Amino acid sequence: MIKRICIIIGAIALSLLLWSSVFAPLTVTKDRSGKPIFHLPPPTVTRSQRSQIPEVPPTLLLHSPVRVALGGRPLPIRVTVKNPQQGMEIILHYRLSDGGAYFSLPLQGNPEEGFEAFIPKYMVDAKGLEYYIEAVNRRGQMIASSGSQDTPHLVQVKAQRARVSPLLWGLVILAVLAIPFTFRRKKR
Image (cartoon, rainbow, N blue to C red; front, side):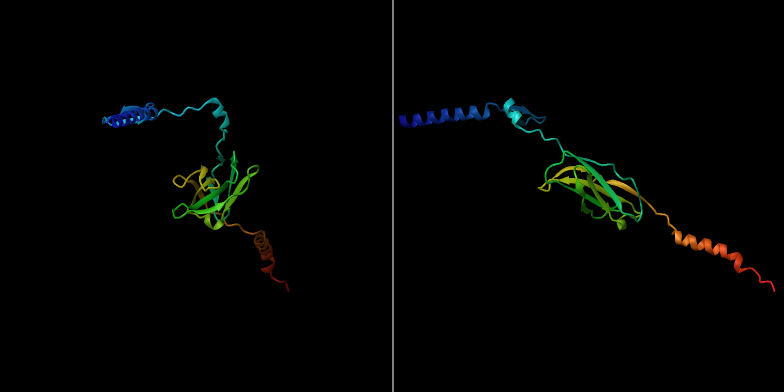
């Protein structure tokens, strides 16, 4: 019997010890309906631990969105990267403004000189364009963007005026100059 009492007292003491070490820092508040909400205190970080955590500035894409483009010409998209990460890739996503799936194209270049890609001329259509740019890390996670799938940059496409080649202009001028000579009457 004494053995059982000692085991029960030992179990109660152990339970109290565990309770105080695990749940003592826990604070409880109640929400509007009266249900309890349990809060743990934030972890404490010492100054020496803070100095060991490296400060990594966020990666930023600096891009001036293209607002107007001439139809039937490749559209250059340029971006500069501030605080690039090792092994990241910059991807241009574009589509016609009437909807549909986005096409993707990697931007070429380097962090010092900037990155560039060209939307193909057959996509620069009178309907207009939508595009956005993403920087992704090695794991494929987005780390920075300019625009998004939900809020892309909109490009108004203007029709390209037809250009007359200089050769055609030369032929027209030659024909105009030759008209007086063709209608001249020969004198007998």
